[in-house]
Amino acid sequence: HAHNNFLFRSPSFVHLQLFSKDRISLIYTSLAYLWLGFLFCIDGFFSVPKQRRTRFRRWACGMDSPSDADQDGAKKRIEGSTGVMEESEAQKRRFPRPSDDVVRKASHWLEHVEHQAGIEHVEVVDVEKLTYDDFFLNYMVKNVPVVIRGVTENWKCRQEWVDANGQPNLPFLREKFGNGQAFVHRKDTQTGQDQVEWCRFDAFLDHWEIDEKDPWYWKDWHFVAEFSEYGAYQCPVYFQDDWLNHYYDVTRRHSTARSERMETSDYRFVYMGKKGTKTNLHTDVAKSYSWSANVCGQKKWLLLPPPYAGFLRDRYGQGTASTFDEDPTLFPNIESAWNKALQVYQEAGDIIFVPSGWYHSVENTKDTISINHNWFNAVNLHWIASHVNLEETQAERAIEDCRELTSPEEFQQLVQQNVYANIGINKPMLAHLVELAVHVQSSCSMGREYSATETEELTAWHRFIHAALQKANGVPGCFAPSVM
Image (cartoon, rainbow, N blue to C red; front, side, top):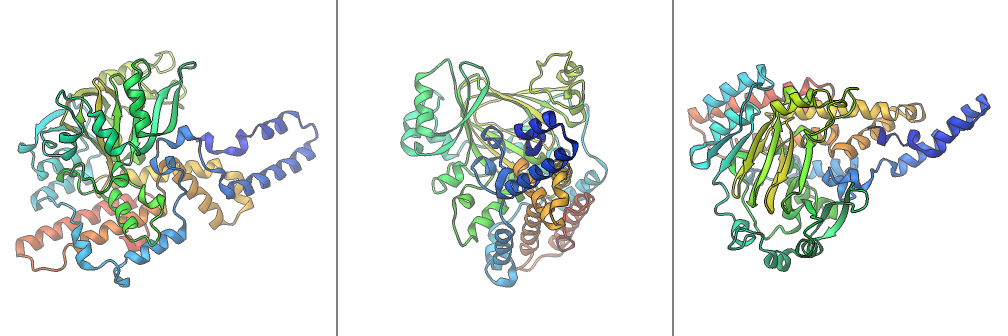
């Protein structure tokens, strides 16, 4: 997070520290630089380099954090008291709900278990044999990965984006989506360093067809937002309890100004890369879940259970390995990490569920197109809240020198802007997001009569959500009392 502390990265400030001889002059000049830096930061210096922006999509699109006025306005438009979000509309978004027996078992896991250690392989399960209850309890709640086979057979993209040889249908993709835009990742031919550039999809396809030695990787394409009418796929029921993308859908739907920011804000992506393109070790944004479906091609996944994440730290405890091939003199436990990693190949049509906090690397072992969502809900909310809280603490430390130059409210606003720049979410946004999700959960219980069994199940489910909120609320200051 040192990259956010602009004052201490400034060459002028370093020059001041090194070459100012007069102590009093140094103090006054330093204060002057701090004041100028503060004025500059208010005007937006917390924006990050383009390479940094690509990891977090909203920031990658050059968008600012939603202002307090934006969030308050959206909240007022969505609240039932305004009459804008009517009961019937809330019922259109019905999160799936597990059975009462599964909820009771899940409550025990939520209370007593964080992660399972000692997992030896990633299970591969046929969709016809996997109920929502099974997935919820055995994978989502237990935070264990799984590959689900046979989900995507009837998807439109499986039929139209793939040619008869199982390869990407380049002519169709170019004709239908050539004006799409996203970031492309490539290697600099001179330095070998990763480069990130904004690119049109047809330009990416041009390179795909002519250059075999320098493959580009098309990442984080907001396809659903950009081509919302196409209907490329249906989100599988296992992943529909998605509070994160629900927030963006509702905010966009009730926005009076359908701005570019609102239209492109979600965590639904399309990836496309040739054989050999890869993504290094990372955990997903804000410790969220993710799922990834191969439209065509094949991926090799290496996943490390969270209890062993410490093996990836360098000898100084400051850096994290980007691959399992790091120098063992700098990363003394990298071999132990490799021994605990799980390897699985994802075939065309397979979907993989990646749980919270699992480091993973991904390599396209064939030319591949994939669809990817980040998401979270009540089950892993405490992971999200903990991560946001950690980012807030680090952001406060990074701009501590600005505290005395601002009011407490202004300082916290700067902190939250910095947190949002780093991970695409902050505490005010998280609290609003949770409030909207809880509103839907309660709204879906209205509007019809329930049997005694259904009423008991609904009550058990609401108790589970309340317990999840309490666990997340154990992280100081994450939610206002109204959310609980």
